[in-house]
Image 1 (cartoon, rainbow over the protein chains, first blue to last red):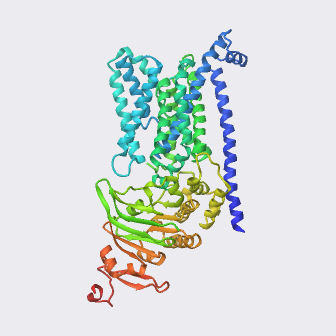
Image 2: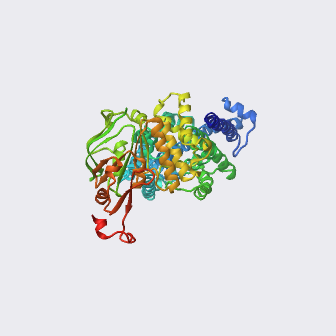
Image 3: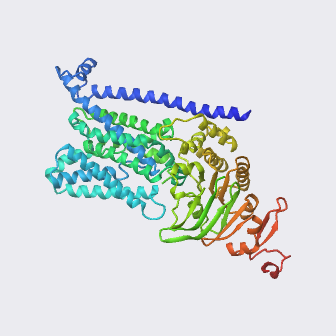
Length: 346
Length: 273
């Protein structure tokens, strides 16, 4: 009977897609492992496998091993920051139903950066702990502000209004940040290198305080996957399917804010990772956030490690900040997205 | 049998009141069509029924309980909703979309069950979309896409299904196809169907119960024969018309009279009497 055969083919289709997702997962994990190895071995001084092994296990007898010891925390930071930004980007695109959403475009990174710069310039803030709390506070305030502005008027927080409010907030807070730094030669250099985005100075001491925030953000984001799936159908349809629209959106956004704030605090605002990565992952595993979110985290880590390694190679014997490299990689992809996809939800 | 009632409802957006003092009993197991002029409050009424809009006064009562006090997921197991022109994300397949209909039946951690599989398969079957289950929703034609969305609402397995203009943007063949499908569901599953419809003649043909809204108030409710009259159409839509029995179904059928081409056989007295 047709009922039986078509049911079988439907379930078959679901199983096929699951198998291809698992295949892609192993591909992405292998690429990530290779990227980590490259990140430890390549740079101003290339090191061999024996030294990598010795360095990772703690030995610093040769210069090469010492280099590895420095590169390990840097690689760990690239993995964490890249994963956080990729995940935050995917969540923000889901929350706002906006294919161009990204922690940068929605003003969250700019808000975090402004808060940190205010802290440095006006309150003489120096410790990473202070950066961290200030950045998360700034990111949260920017997100609330953008959401409040975007919610004004009929229909609540529509994707279009959120994007406009976010863009305006990002520009306003960047201008304000520049206005604070310009007359202050004493802090300009330090702020500038932090602002462009760097992971070069990473140490485990700097990474540890961020971990609780990153883990909390990660859990919140991954738990919101199903809610984001429903939100993608529109608020009315989501509510009709039993989603708490405001809670689902708020919880996911909070997770993304935690990830962005913590990442911005250590690395400065790094752009384009959150924009590019979810689009690439959608090509691999489709629109289901239960797959999309973990893939975005892994792919974000790959992209940031790759950008860091490229930055070390092309500017030898010096280095290029990772934020500049992601912008170079991200800008063409951004144009490709806008040209290829109908950006109809805007 | 699930009952759905509206009691002294008042609702609007911001400070603008759209519905005032509206009472309505939705007949269980029947098809109800809400009709009225543009901006009369039809969709607002449907949004209140679906609890998408909180009334400023009065209440919507499902099985003797105000919908405001029913947990969201619980409500979604009893009352399904198909919004006007819903959106599917790029790249989502039909099977994925329809399986989302199972969301209200799944807990935070519970696994996908065989019953979920069966509900999805039955929904695809009933809407004749099983053979396009692999396709991406945004690549389907308008009629197919609407059938897929109805399949999603069916997978939800609710006693009541609310639809906001399910035939908008469809050509006449697909309009009839969708309405036939809704009648099938009503007859085979006993689903109570409430829909906003623009086309009065299709509403009279397919609905058991018509609800005419005028300026946010209930004008008339009842069988198509009692609601679709020349006087009601004049009062609700401000249009003069003739109502004749549909030669095939026997239901009332409305022929609007414009200022032009009203026909040589009719004198002015005929049309105004």
